[in-house]
Amino acid sequence: QVQLVESGGGLVQTGGSLRLSCAASGSSINIMGWYRQAPGKQRELVAKFISSSRILYADSVKGRFTISRGNAKNTVYLQMSSLKPEDTAVYYCHAFLGSEYWGQGTQVTVSS
Image (cartoon, rainbow, N blue to C red):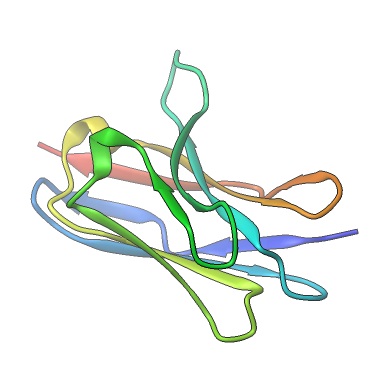
């Protein structure tokens, strides 16, 4: 069983920055990243590691968001810059280790 604990959400103005963190219990995890869900919309991929070194980004965040991971590969970070109101959502940490695991979500609100 993997537990994911997120932190770092909050309220920021347009153009601002935030950094999200997600720590997983247990061993290193190759497939790990971030999704988000805005009100009335489906959950969507933001960025994730799809292997130990390959990264997938949503087109909407390319050039603005950067995902990274700790040396132990059980922590991922999402550095978000040039934030826009449309980035407002609940951000969920996701991991796959035989099964899918989700964090509880952290709210990111970007004011215009």
